[in-house]
Image (cartoon, rainbow, N blue to C red; front, side):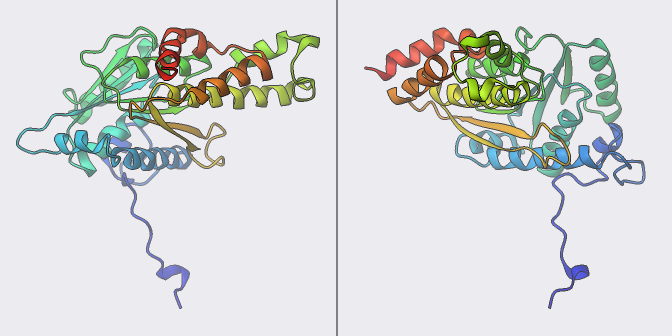
Length: 298
């Protein structure tokens, strides 16, 4: 009989004593997670599990193998859009460099100068000046030295999440998008503005229910548009809701698969007939969606 104390703990993808976790304040200098930082550490571990899963797919595996080639490594390029304090940016680099021995170049983008300056200082202390770069700029127009292989956007507010998806779609080298949405306002505001003309009065009469419905519709459309534009998409739990209330993660791997015309019919029915809304993402990617529709109908 296996007793509780006999159970073998599952090894962490990024050990508590990793120097990067100490540098960003998740762990103390004795190599243990600080009190009050367990939820953040749990989010990091959950995110790395999803990253690990996606990097093993046929689309990403050759990129990883090339980056792990000791004699002629080509770094895997990752951009974290809206990186903030960059806990996950540093954790991603540490996981690849320290745990997987995979060469990488990671760029964190944030609109705040303070974030760029602080994160750059931390990267310098770790000796990662040539591995990590932090840029001050907007998600929708930031210029990178080279296009990324992986695009990450975790909890970028409202349509900033959509802007990250657009950049990921339009960067032709981007093979993986990991998107954890945050607050939603665009679709909710459109639903509220319908007033008595709302399409689904039972669902939209109460503000709280309308907000939750808008969240679901927004993320469903994001996932569907990615499918239409050539990605294999999974919507999964990012982390337990005890660690973060925003625990949905959109995993999208580019396959360039040609969409069926039925996908466009489903989108039209949802937006035009069922809810009468036009999400920001639909407006921004109108030309790409119509080009895909035209190709699918031939």
